[in-house]
Length: 207
Image (cartoon, rainbow, N blue to C red; front, side, top):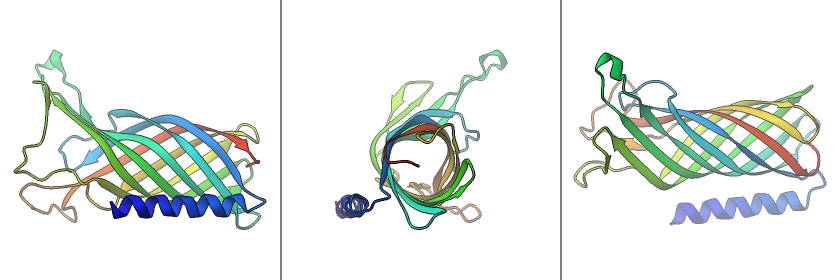
């Protein structure tokens, strides 16, 4: 509960500072996530999901600005069967988050480059295999209700108000610990890795 309060407070402080700044910009974004989970045994960015939300930013110099977002983001993992080879194994993990990324962005001609961090609050999960929907047994480790990670990305401007964003993000804290509490290399659990492609439109101010 405390994490939610801190998250909301930081968002309100940022928005408040933006409103008092002459360089305040705001807009909306919508796109697609391609994600995978390291530590679950299924490789490949095979899990498709959606990402959508709002963003605002303020300039701190002519070339650098600070941006904050609040997004709905779907992550997870997926394994599709290969029935032609006799493989019927199917797996789907869908995890829905409310995320707040904070990043610094640097201008270079029609491009912008970004780097930062994010905090995600888990709001829903879905697990399914070839038998059907299932849940993790209560005696095993459950999902954390949060996700913390780093991100980096690039923007391309079509116009002053319309742009495309490509972003890669990765958990730095596992969102579920291995049931055996074993460690593999430096990992002690499962981590999200997400490629995000989205369009953004500025409806207040100019980018």
